[in-house]
Length: 267
Image (tube, rainbow, N blue to C red; front, side, top):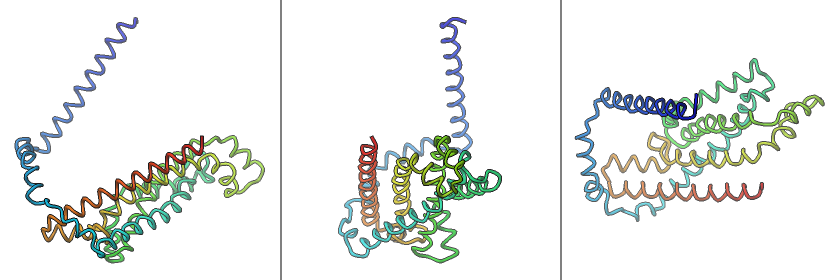
């Protein structure tokens, strides 16, 4: 088979795949009964709706002590959820990494199960579940973010652990080292840079989650957002949304700076 025939065959395959892709999209729209006329009509009113309801933005509201305190609450929830979740996830990830797990028959499956279990439930659902158990407030939010971080960090870190050089690990194990020594001297030096990067990335998503879960009873900025939405305080709602956007952008910028700094130090 010459190059021209291969080229034509690849083009035919790509055409089939693309056609199938758009056909499935078309079937989804038909099944869901999406009204495009209604969609574009609403899209045309979007600008006027924002101008009439959400403008002007009531900036002084987000500078009041009560709301500023809720920002601190959200940051603390995110930080506690991150620290507790990462500690638990690091242990689970070590057992869930197929190449270095000390127990492939039991420990590996336990680690995998808890990581998958934590990831399978959205943080807002975790919040609702914990609110029903411990009541409204920051405790439920912290517990929800902890479960979220276990699943998120555990998956990424376990995959990183599976890429370590096993020669060094097996050499240390063959000398009679226990699992703590194996991790400290054989695994950690290989993954510490990746660990820091994953940790920073996890903080990004954890902080964003902490700004919203209050809407479901966990306190913080989300609680103020829910209260003003229900009271139809659109000017205040827009101010809260704007403050969340600013805080997330600041967190992203700080995280990017830290990642770049760590990367340069490791070169």
